[in-house]
Image 1: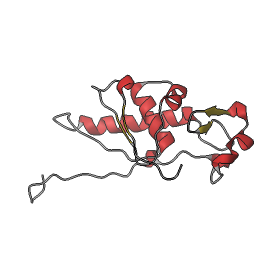
Image 2: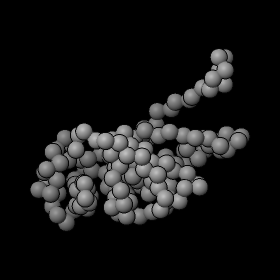
Image 3: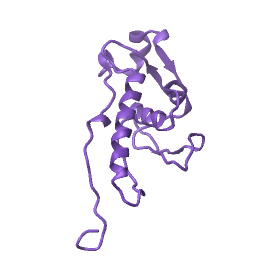
Image 4: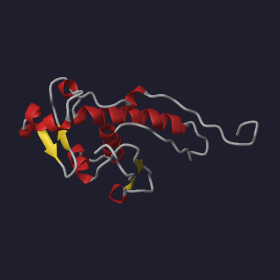
Length: 145
């Protein structure tokens, strides 16, 4: 609590929450994904063609590794909470947000990419009492699709 009786919020900027490194695809229009990456290097879903391994890009296994590192850091933070009842809000990008979800629930990244869309400003609840099959994805109306 702060001096006015309200709660204080601690903000920490974490480098692991940055956007996926797109390598040669950085700045490229989504319409060029198949042409530049080739059909054999894409995982197509209803809404997105995910490029898997263009030169210089982080792969999804790389992102899962980064997500596990982030989750280990968060676990250390929550262990310091004497009530062990901490809530943490992470703000990140879509591809990495989905890989945090995959790492948290120990799911295969390919499965998670196909499972749901995670767009800008959307929220996923990760909780011990919320199994992955009951994932809470709070969708918002997207204007940049």
